[in-house]
Length: 269
Length: 144
Image 1 (cartoon, chains in turn purple, orange):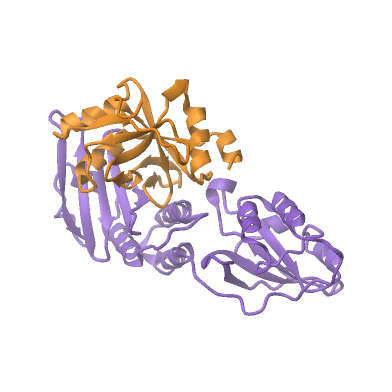
Image 2 (cartoon, each protein chain N blue to C red):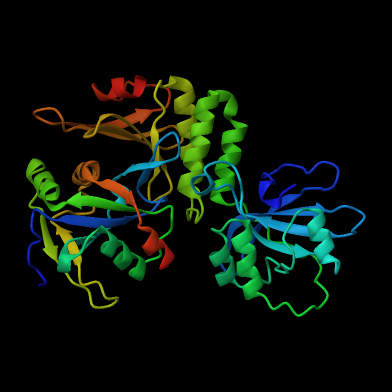
């Protein structure tokens, strides 16, 4: 199996055990990567830890993650790596890799990322170090939001769930957000589940980490709802009308009564 | 020169980031911005004058990449000076666009949208409707 095809959370049947947890990027306190520990084919007796960046749909166009680092627990690296289809000679540990190298490599697909690590790490033939001990486990805002979406997927149609996952991925990857309001995300999920809008909204983040959903009836006509747990604020504009129509107010999750026309109809249709 | 009005026929560029103001459609593709894309300081909203010194979109991408961290997920927000002034007229705000070159870091094409306060959310919402977003040029992404 090609390492670059290992999906997040999947198990490589027959030859590998996958265990995922998040590492904090050294010196930054920011978690953005997952480690998969692969127990490779017993013939080679090698254990490899693969560091894979989170899903990045706008880079790969789908669900393929990028491997940005590799550490091994055995001196028989090359054959072990070959057994799991990974590039040879990469000797980077997450905790030992200098932050600039991580930053330089993390947007790259697997091959170029390995090249970056090869150039940045001194390959002197010394025995490879053991797998990292006691990794700092932090959950990124992106992971938190994905977990919430998964946990509450019963409220959403499949297309709605997929769209929200894509939108959250773009807004929170690869650099993440300082903080995200989980109450806002839960409010958004409740709203979509309650009112089941035919058109899925566009999504954005406010500077204080709240989710804002917008529906548009044209290039200069939009209504935007910014979510708290139980409701939020809305603002609507239709600049195509003469005179232009502008309105704003508050809304609650369970009702569209707080929205005025024509903006209410844009959310419903 | 500093304080000179930017011609209404010219264009402004904003550096837009996913976690502050970029709007994405159901496919996860950026399609616009919200008011969060505007950084409103005491002296105005920071932008870059695209046509300054015979510049174009490619050159402003390189300038933005030289003074900020730009990534593939970021976008350049484009706003015409004419639309900016028109929003002011429509909202009864005296909005102007002035050349405001910066020495450190060097940004000679810097311009300010003046007359908008941080609390002028309706004005910012309306300005956001006129912003068109584009990807950063490949050259500017490689230069980072």
